[in-house]
Length: 52
Image 1 (cartoon, one colour):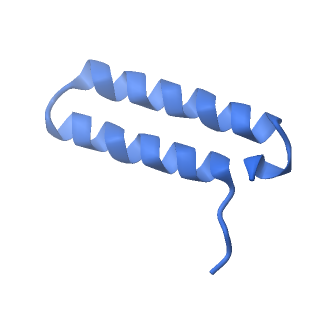
Image 2: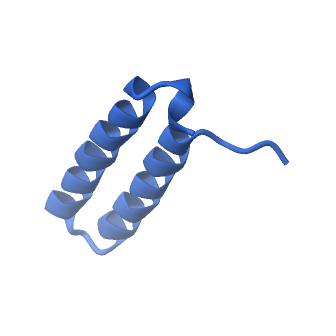
């Protein structure tokens, strides 16, 4: 199986955590998790070669 870039994994995990927060109706945490994972994914991407 092809290795996924770190930025994709960071974003996927953040979305998964945010969905769990939404299921608990913790909307503030869900938003925080989405913003944080978006920023982390962007940082990893900018570091080059897909953040691998």
